Length: 403
Image (cartoon, rainbow, N blue to C red):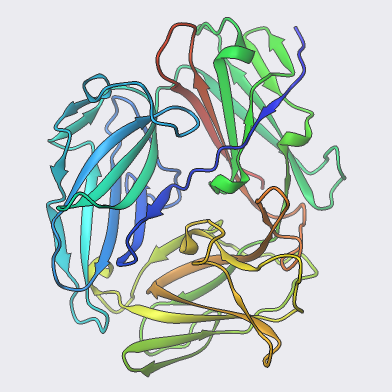
């Protein structure tokens, strides 16, 4: 049985949303592996670890609650008693003050599930962090997987747009043998993202082929992604050494200042072993980087001419994978370059320079270029709501690399 493929509007929901400027360096990791998407398996021993800092040593009591969402990140109809065992609100009890740092902060840790909370349903979730006045200070989104189907994703540089040039095209196959999906075009939503960046997401609603226990999505422009270039990198692992990607480091009270090597527009593919946009907190001279790594002001500069039809952004996990005031660069007329300063915790960082397309998506073509050789991560999430059900199950996923 063949069918036309239609794509629903893309759903952009940041994995991490900060409502308080004092909250920094929030990370969501599974089983201690920074490279994995924030997905835990229902009923397994998987552990979701949420960590973050709050600037200052004035400890603030924080509480957390957990909400369940539909596939498009609208709050679901399910009650707390339906999707979790435990209390509706709990204290964040694991915290510690920073040690021997020039920028004082309090580090918080939280794991899900724990003695107070266990999850009962698959789907989309968010941990909502609040202060004692009830103000939401941050949100950390994650998914719970109920593996009822297998998902295969193939990546090819031979696309409907070009061959071995600037794009990568995906083919997604859902194997539902033994699991009933009566009307896939009505019951399934397949969300596909590049490098776990929500603003690259597309949502597939109608398969191109159904039959033989398989549901296929292929040969559509919705599954063609601009390839970009490998992420740029820099390391700042102590206070004394000029490291990868750095031009200078120095103390100008009250901060250490890191000046990165000036960046330029790329016109060729640049091979590098990057972390696909992620960052890792680390100081090589301390025992516990969580509480002993310092914060530094990092200065980015980008030459390559001014653009008058789009803003330019520093993009990656370091800026939350979003295009907003926090990531937007300023053009220095006198210096003839774009500039941005970010307060970042010591570690290893990836970033790109992007502009915005007409649809609001990040565009790499202007300053990074698009090259089919680029390694990218692609995630496909399969949501199922059978007729009469009240929520969207996450029944399958794949996470693959383009090289």
